[in-house]
Image (tube, rainbow, N blue to C red; front, side, top):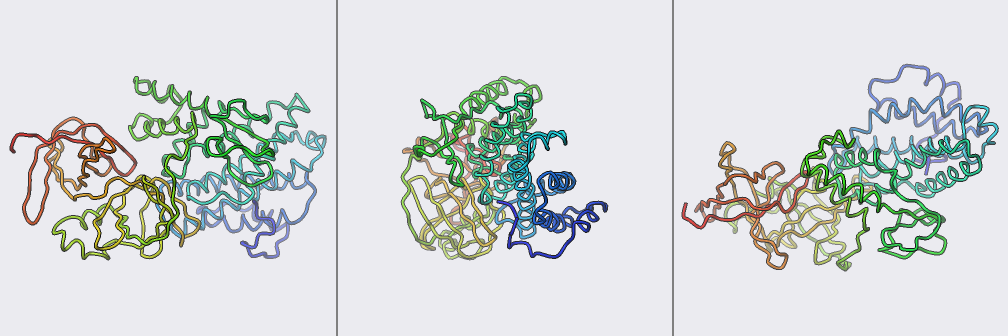
Length: 503
């Protein structure tokens, strides 16, 4: 989990005095300049093998500097797209290592310290566990923001910290209040995992974190199996694995911890109802952007996940065949615009090579193989086709995973087998033509003819003009917008109705 003995940092001789001298010097104005020495000094301090109480004093001296650096650096990861820029990935790796070192160090202190010795320093084991859990939660936040796997050992360490907190509070009723930090951070980790953050943008994750800061305490945690496991998850006490929902797989006999977010789901449902009724987000102690439709949709989505963990409805079939992807909205629009015969021969205008690794009737999981890609995030749309001779279909990115700059895996939701590049002119918004994709009606999905536009271009009140150009001829149609079907931070999809009268 941490960096003790880590081969990722080249060991350099450094004395404790050198570490303290660095700590006494002014902090760098650029947090990136502090990351390398901070990692090195923490690494060397942990390897000194100091007694727990001595180590506690050392880590307490370094932690404020580490937290300050992390607070400056972590926001840089919230507006990123995939694949992550190399500098940002280096930043993320450094932050994960720093939080891992602190988490591991404090957990070691909590495990090996004499409670009386801690009490002499005005500390309790529950407090130390709370500090450790804070850094474990920070590791998870960074991994989620960068669509990376959780650091090795994270979930075993989190369970250990939580169980020590509960046991120490039970043994000494005078420190019950000290377990609040550990419990709060642990519940944050559980709720964020249950919300399926791999399907969110960095800004959405940041929004959800602030909601959980206020309401995450409503999660139920138990060491006994639930009588009705419908809304429950389990954690394996002997394996370093994230939580698993009972709806996905039954718990093994050695599962040692269970939790449910059902109460949090009910709280979230109440929040959505109050926001729709016009209540201010400030009164609910959540971010102001909660009134925006895409964040309201996010709250509805996570409410559903928290109330009842989703089952896998469509069976996935492993596969291994190549496809072409166009991952840029403007490039894809240009590919589809104009003469179909010419369009079919354009293969290098933003088109990249991917491999389908599994598929279901609802979409694909694809792995990047070749070609330059940039700007991908959950909620954006991609053009997909098996071969240059096949028409372009259109998909939406539902989740993303990236272990390193050379690896990017996406989960794609199938939207339509074909799409047409068109322009729309909102009649009450400056009459500037906007690029859009015309999606065919899909009666089997109970979806009529619809338009896909970039975020912010759905105007529910007012007509618009639809411009369709085919073989040099332009068809002009007056239209009425109808229901908004889907909205993400990148695009909006809505049905519309054509005016039956001639233009």
